[in-house]
Length: 117
Image (cartoon, rainbow, N blue to C red; front, side, top):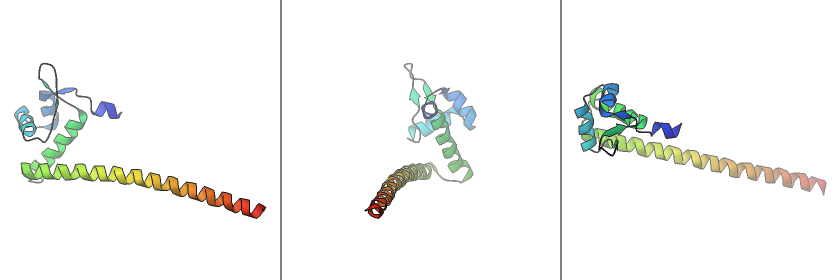
């Protein structure tokens, strides 16, 4: 399913309609570096589901929360960092659980062997 979320399938007019903005606004966000849609051989913009989610975040920050474009850029970068840190923490928790599990298994095994001797 993750491959589909990154698949560029929406042309700019459809993406703009789905987000509720003009196509020119999406071009502006692209020039500002807030979103980077894929390009076809004919240089047409295609947006993925992930791009649309990001655009919705941008729209919320700007329209609903009153954040300017520079503030939206900073907020998005911070959200991206938080997501990466959460992923990293999740991986570390998994690794820690695996180590603890092995340690507990060894302790049980050692305890069983020592009672047999």
